[in-house]
Length: 125
Length: 125
Image (tube, rainbow over all chains, first blue to last red; front, side, top):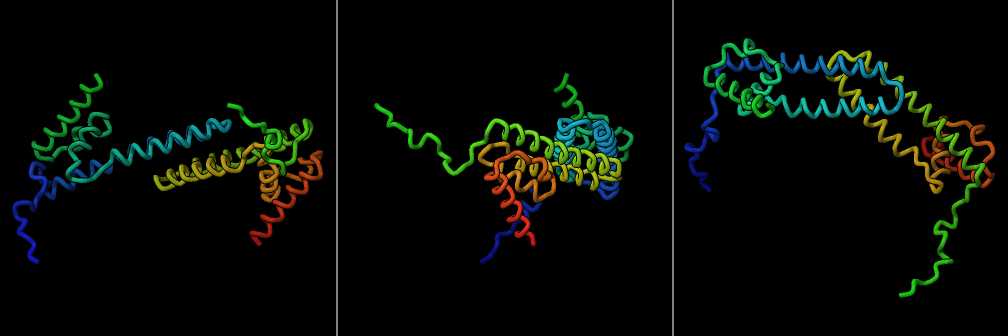
């Protein structure tokens, strides 16, 4: 059985920007930095909450807090190139990432990222 | 439509012991004491674990620990009179309850409780 040539469909996401090697390095560094900072925030808050536990309600509040943070972080930090402009847009909007950390990405990507951040800001306002 | 007399079936669990008022008071005190001690243990362990968190693996270990403890405690501390001899048997086996704390319960109940504890001990051996 011959499999038909799929040349036309070989890159299924034709509207997605292609990330150069240097852009990938910048993206990875920025992504890891934001994730590291967010984790540090959760760790510090966890230590505070644990220290203040007085009874079972506080204990299960901490469990709930951790479960919610884990789910949110899993959802938010999606390192697929097809998702990265959305991810960075959100991180920019949440001020978890500075524009400087994205310096070196192509203007096409920066434009998409800023557009996501602006959209989220307007959505809240 | 007449509903047939249900006198014969009015107490559906005929093999279950009936708990007197004083037995219920003893049971409630023993149950709450064991639960309180177990919660205190989890709280102390949580504070230790939180203090020692160095990275995200430790953080999610703590979440997992709390979720497991909550489920286990929910399962174990079932204050229904139809379940109490099993519950106390397990707590006795786990040394979370002393025989003295059950002092005052009828011999029928103590026998059932000891029997559950012995069964669990043999099950492990």
